Image 1 (cartoon, rainbow, N blue to C red):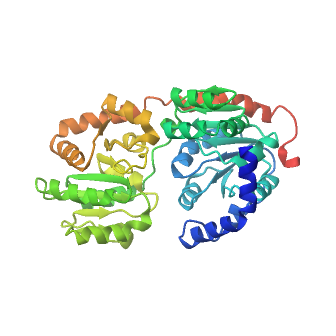
Image 2 (image 1 turned 120 degrees about the vertical axis):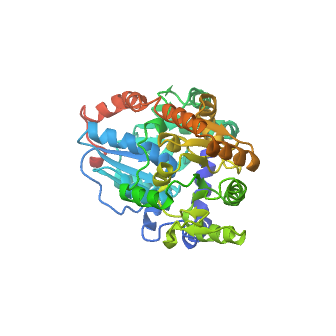
Image 3 (image 1 turned 180 degrees about the horizontal axis):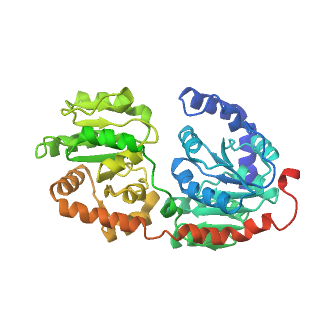
Length: 431
């Protein structure tokens, strides 16, 4: 019933959807040159043979899929990989990092006409759906074509679980379209089962299998030389409100560390100039990376508002505060910092990574702080105490490498579906 109502609403609501998409284009949140893909219009020809379609919502989810896609195509030379996401940022990332025989398209907006156009063209033979973004028309239309679907790295937060419990028929129908649901944690797996997934397993969190974020070696050397031996800390993937906090923390800590450098990498790089203007208005000496500013001796704050360079700054700073955690937005993936040897500090709002945050805190791989004062205290202690900092760094590295087996375990769960692609029968490309 609810699926029928949703389908009807997305059909008759076409004018409102078009208006919404037009506003997103005006705001730069849609790719103007490739906008047709959002309407199900393919920009590429379908490759011959078997095609695995993997969908991820945005950057974080797509990073989790990268290593899996690479292994799939390495192990199965006859496959091609289609990866869909919904954001401009993730599209740029995929263009840079997808392996050979894999390519990116934007996911169609969840209207039946767009979804059918997309499926008619691509005719996937197997679908891998990452984490928790269940678009009803996309899921149900794919299932109706009897294309095998597997949920990988499934995540159901407490809030999502409560929300879906209010629509039990809809979520049971959607999950019923998946041949297998693989949860990140035992709790995620149990929630998927309780919501109606017919078959579940818990091989672990694919984020543990992700490759380290890349960085240019020459730039590491150049920027490292410019910073020299200055004490420094990184505020990574920050959101509005957190840059001002980082600026005030910098001012407090600079009293004891006059040559302190605070590096701020905003989650959305286009905010860089506005962040810099606010911090300069507060009397801080700010350099902006996108403007080509150098890190001079007098630079107190370096706003690194460029795309795809977070790996560079994790390598240059061994103290990293994870943004999106001092504002009520759910936190970021701290494994990326831990893997590259950072002592991790994060706020209390880590609901998107609750189990990981708990385990990192218990193992000493991360420090949880309640607020701005706590952040200043934690970063100050790590700057002052090299032994404590080194201990936290080692704990973080150990934690990040503790579940390297997860990729093999996920591949073992997928093997029957992959084998079925080679055991006879025609590809959907010929259907």
